[in-house]
Image (cartoon, rainbow, N blue to C red):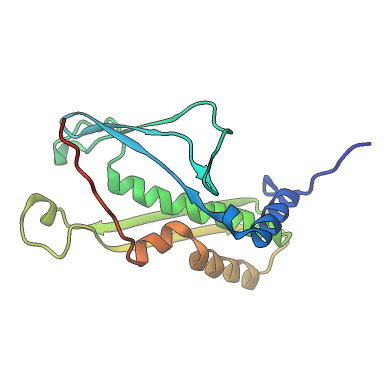
Length: 188
């Protein structure tokens, strides 16, 4: 006997519904702790490693290798362009989050996507970072533009889905709502 999996937009819809049901039945399963490590390599360059995570207090075993990233600044900010800078990664994280949310929620609704792109840009004044006067050290505005194509959804359905994804995006939520950040220094 062959088991059939319902897939839309590359998403296992049966698995998505099972995950929703499991978290609904046991909310602790929705609790994750994600981790990242950054090591300075000189100048403005850093190497990043993203390792495993925990779910409901238990270590995940699905990752067999770490994810590795290189970060740097452009030459105008004293770097060598060995990788994106931190604020570019933040913008990319928002684009990734929006795309995952849009594709998965579209799949759950039976909406087929043939194209989905997000352009994300942000305005930032580096003055405060450099110890000078300015509005604030972070983004003063972020704009995201989505482009989507679907053979079986109305314009209204696609717009409603976009509004829903904005409302439920974890990355957007972190950007628009204060998140406590605790920093500890260990001197070696």
